[in-house]
Image (cartoon, rainbow, N blue to C red):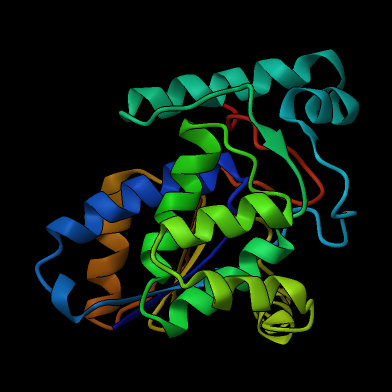
Length: 229
């Protein structure tokens, strides 16, 4: 069984959703027969790679004075899940990071790179948005420095793979991320509960899809705030 996950490293709900999904998968009876594949999704496609800014400033620019408070709400929820979450992180283009995630897949290191990237961004507030910082980060996860540098030096390498993932997301009408497609038929989106992910895995295993489960997502056209109660 294959689980495809569309996500962006700067998406708080992807960070929380991954943690909850990982818990559900760890307890799933057939977990050894599940392949998890990460797909690219940029919350800010086309963002200037030279524009790196504090996330607080970005939220103020987008949502006014309530912006930082939205991030603080999500931070509290993440911490309740046992996840470290810093609000003093930065934000920038994730296109090159997505290209490196495709590289990591070829070396069997995709899961390690994705997990390390979420941790570096949210728990450590590391800057993953410049070529030099990305190169250092990627080699720390086990990728060869020369290979990483070759990819970063050539903006066309793995670009088609990133765009193909994003095109597929468009075909699936993905409204935001995280977005999970299980065995090509069972859809669950957003920062769902562990129980919801468990139900989705069990449904997919028995080949009985019954609609779409949705929860809070990060969207290119909206916010990452908590869903209405």
